[in-house]
Amino acid sequence: MFAGHPISALVPALNEARTISSVVAELRALQHDEQPLLDQIIVCDNGSRDDTAARAQAAGAVVVSEPQRGYGAACQRAAAALAPCSAVLYVDADGSVDVQDIPPLLSRWQDGADLVIGSRRLGTVLPGGMSVPQRLGNRLACALMSLVWRQPVTDLGPLRLIDRRALTDLHMCDRGYGWTAEMQCKALNAGLRIDEVPVTVAPRIGRSRISGNLRGIAAAGYGILGMVLRQAAIRYRRVLDPTVSIDTRTGEP
Image (cartoon, rainbow, N blue to C red; front, side):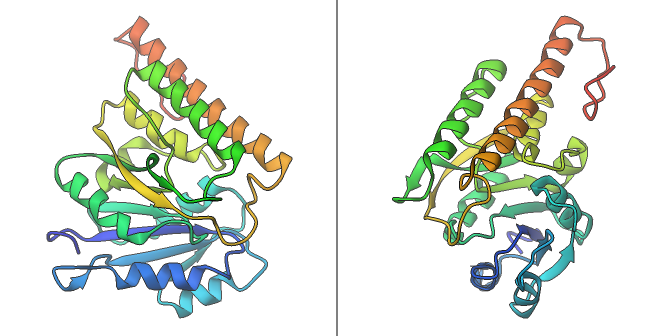
């Protein structure tokens, strides 16, 4: 509970048995006004071959399963299990984020932000916290978003907090790597208030399925940049004809 508002955390996880127990424990340990900060922690097991699900449940999380691989698919399945709440926090399961960075996100949301992104570029990246492909891809996507929407965007963010009503209104649909960019681009298209706060990231524990191989890098790049371009096309169609109603799921009138 944060200032009287129930807060839920969603943690997509694939083969994160080495870290998921500590991630859930650290989230459960967060306090606000001497009460647990988070009212619900949902871990979505995205088809793990290890005991990620069992360890998450033992640590005290609600565990749901999404066998179809994909970051967006896991996020959507976890969101379907949400209890009534005021805001939703997305946390990586790889042990790279510092949960002490979460309260500042909530404070910015309480001040009126609809979406708060934890920015590594505004904060601190410890040695090994981001690979070269991650840095380059992140900067390219953010530079393109900043150019199209004429607002500063510094990071896609390992931590993000979104108002529950805003999340519902965005009609998130990507089931792969484009999910994070979809949320930010749709929020920009909707004119929502987006804030960034600095966060610290450490090296992930275990090998990354994205930056650790060429196929993962290519798939992530295609998903993220493709999503930015599709949402940019929606923006420009609206600029050219403000009367047109665009289906944000398909990009068609």
